[in-house]
Image (cartoon, rainbow, N blue to C red; front, top):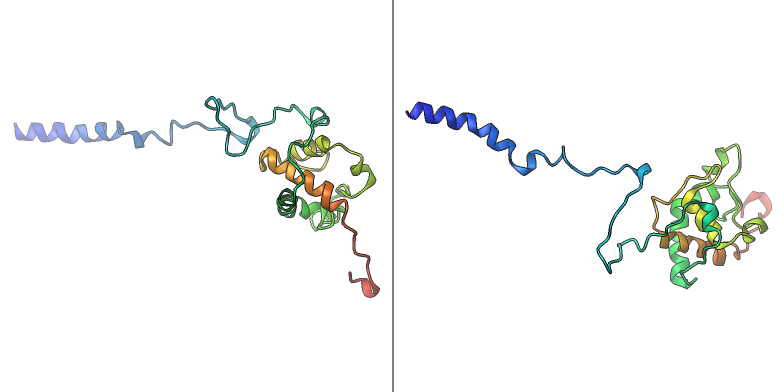
Length: 173
């Protein structure tokens, strides 16, 4: 009788172990790919950590948007920090499109201090950062909506207004 109980107990161990929750966690989990986006139903009266999502279909739809973030010193500083992370490799420190990565492209990245860019709306610039353009990748997944508005504030109120140092003799600035 003891042998029979031992055999049944040994056979029951693997069945019992597979019933534990940790044996299925990796098999049955939600998986959202970056290209899919996400449909998240937030609880009523709650605000996501990254701020409210802006429901804009594309860059054209963003053109008429008004910047909800005031261009304070703090916002411009945050925009500058983000610019150094995401934009500087292609657009360069001065925003002229002469960054180390931008130099290898056939088409030069946009000069963010040009009269053309100055004539664009804040919404269009925000939409370009969000959805990308011809050679520019989109940063809608990498940055929050508010962070993109900080970038717009930096481009508008600091980068476009900073005088660019002229080269001196010997090619040094």
